[in-house]
Length: 268
Image (cartoon, one colour):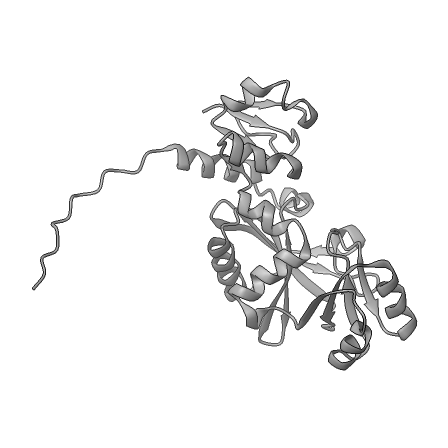
């Protein structure tokens, strides 16, 4: 199996990988086109790799398209598990929108920038001045109810299963991202969370993502998922992410066993 990767770090440990710098993709056209799998392309490469060159990519194109910004991601989650998404308003920044927000939300609430990660671009809005600042700096508005939490869950899904899950305990402010200083805790994770993440990922065709999930009482909420999630906690837990990736794509290379022919049903 011939594999080309555009990310040497995430592909480390996967056998038979040739690394190509993303900016050299057209210079290395023959090498890329002859590969059985292309791993971790950058977002600008995805469409022509799949639609023009017919390549199989990992993560899946579903993962890239739905994970590219919070609007697409949230709408997909609302379509699949609406009861498991915090109340959210997504709208253009238009005349009268401030009144709409204040009618639907009480302070504090969360305002997000649609393309951000690691807790950046996520703001706790608890005053009119802060809301005005957010409105003055964003054309697309993403407003979400605030859930009072001191921790949330990162659930890592690779291939067709959850391979790791851990708590992120906030240390500073309301954000629980590890990049924002949260502490990683490997306490037991509710089985229903694992099952729900696997259901959502399978339904949406996502095969490589870190899902951010909150548990409030008996209710489970999805915040978002990150296609290129941080590997710090899985590495600490000695979870072989690269092996799961290789096993998954290798399994897809194996032909399906022949199925017995079924007799043609007859009309009664």
